[in-house]
Length: 283
Image (cartoon, rainbow, N blue to C red; front, side, top):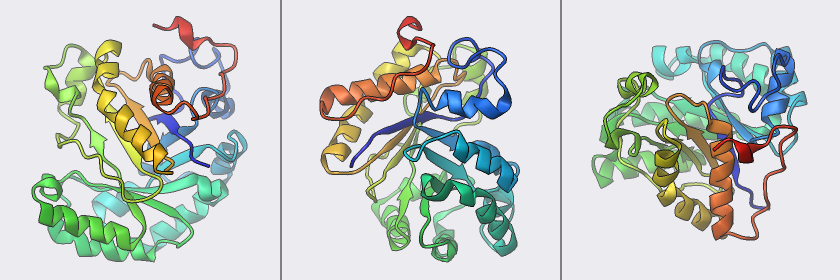
C-alpha cells in the first residue's frame, strides 16, 4: 500500500517541549511522542557517532512498523575516508542499526568535494551494502547536475544498486537574503543546487528547506505537492522531510504538507492525530 511519510531533521528540539512534546519528557520517551506527529525522521546524529545497539533497540520500541528512519552513515565513512577502506566501520554501524530492520534507509550523504570523477568509488561501495537494506545517496557537488551526461552517470550507478537520489531542495531558502540569526547561520552552510524532482525507485525521498516564515515555507513547497501527489498516483511511497532554519514549527509543518498532498490525492490515508497537543492552534 502506498503511503506518504513526513518527518523532520530530529525528534527532539529545544522549542518543542510544551508544543509537540510534553514538558520534561524523559529522553527515552521523546521519539515515541514525536512519532505521534510524524511517521519518519532523519537520523543525523549517527553521522557523528555510531549509537550502541541497545540505544537503537529503544528507537525500535518507540515506533511502529510503519515508521521510517533515514539513517546517515558515519562521518568517517563518507567524509574522512570517502567510502574507501571502511569495512570495519560499516560492519559496526550495520550491526548497531539492525534492530530497525527494513524501517531504516541507509543514507550516504557525500561531501561537496565528492565529484563526478568518483562515481565508480560510490558504485563499488553501494554494491557492498547488504542487499536487504534500502539505500539512498545525497550528493552536493554541482557537477552532478551540470549536464545530462554526468547526471545520467550517477543515475546509472544508483540504479545498479537500487538506490534513491535524495535531493536537498534549498531553492526557496536562497531566493531572499536571510532575515534571522538562524537563517544567516544556514545561509553559509546549506548547499545551493537546482531543484531535482526525478525519482529513481518506488520510495523517493525529498529533503526540503524552507524559511523561518511559515507562509514562505508553505508557498515554497507547492511545486512539491504536485510532484509527490504524482508519485503516489504512480504507486510510489515517498518520504518528505521538512526543514526550516530554526525548525521551531517543523512537526506541524510536516503534517501540513501531508494535508496539502492529501487534498490532491483524497484516498491518501490521514496521519493519526497526535496526543494531547493540538496542531491547529500553532499558526
